[in-house]
Amino acid sequence: MKARRTAEVLIAALCAGACLALTPGANAAIKHGAPTRSAHAELARGKYLVTFGSCTDCHTPGSFFGKPDMSRFLGGSDVGFAIPGMGVFVGPNLTPDVKTGLGSWTEQQIVAAMTTGKVPDGRTLAPVMPWHAYANLTKSDALAIAAYLKSLPPVSHQVGGPYGPNQTPKEAVMVVVPPDVYSNLPKPGGSAPPAAAAPPAASGK
Image 1 (cartoon, rainbow, N blue to C red):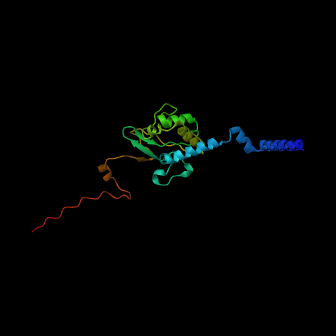
Image 2 (cartoon, one colour):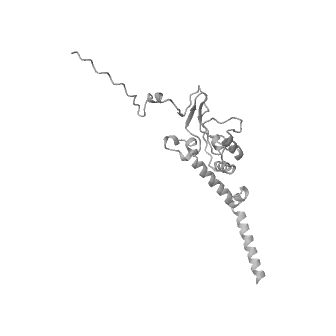
Image 3 (cartoon, rainbow, N blue to C red):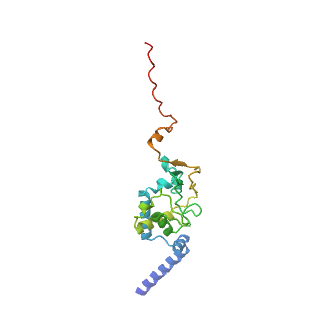
């Protein structure tokens, strides 16, 4: 009886293995490596850090206008930051698109860019990217962010720039200006700065 039970268990195991081998999704999971519990935890941590760090503000189009385009989440901004003497810099595409995003970058290269400001082609990121702050990330947190970015759906979107000081950007630009300059700029709606009150007319008496 015991031998028969053992045989039944072996047959069941073999059948299960055969079914697994015939399942395309299972084969893909085996081939590419299904995410383990620890991998899921790392991606969840990366998502939390990206959300908490408000990466979407500078890297998702529409965010600075109050209407982020979530179909292009982290696919590159539509607003540039002006840095006096340097030019205008637009938040790039952080999705794993090969041509316009981080698809050809390794996780280690993403971590290096975040924490040292150095990108694979040798350039240093513009000061608007706060890598000095991100340099304080733990290695595990930085890797979790990189893993999460690599897991995103690729978005094909090439941002403009970087623009030199004498170039004209195609995007809206965020600029820091002195208060007196701001006061004389046209206000939303096109209203002009208030005119100075006219002096009272002189009396003929």
